[in-house]
Image (cartoon, rainbow, N blue to C red; front, top):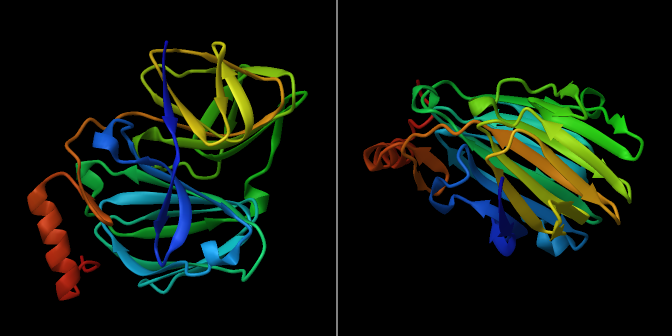
Length: 277
């Protein structure tokens, strides 16, 4: 087993939204995951500007809100709100133009947005979007003191398999929220040939005796199973997926396979035909 530590860092995006960037492309080393951001603030000045209208092509996003709320609107006429404990999936495909704005003017806003790469064969497919309400995202008690919410894909924990409502992420990607009470240890299985990431957003976690504190992420390689433990309790975002193993070129909101495709995406957006099939 190989364990790599990644540390989040302060950043900003959209109209001045203050975030923690946990992963941001980094030479595609976390394939198929492109970017992971966390927003966690009770200061409205940190998030009130939101993410006004902007384009995407060639990737998918998964937004998970733990506290607070966001509203999505796009060029297809979709409008949806997600609140505490809810998620939103969007596949940009050929092109989408959307906005994501906070539903609140004060109070705690805590959530994550994940970017997932699309394989070359799917980069120009039609855009799609779907909200997932809280009732579709239940908490499961895995063992006494451990709860799991599977948002996408599936996880096998303590020899039990749990599935989330989002079943079509590229690269067999899976996303889950794990809560551990103090002095709990659990084991994840079926991890062969996957990119496995654990981001600690609350408390701390021990992996093979190595401690990961809040706002740090562990990348696990070359393992079929993984035992994790905590003495003080932890909240952990779990990610796993199969590497796509294709060239990746990124420019702002566009993720393609070649520089030429990126230039075409920019031209299409400037000409107003990004979203046209």
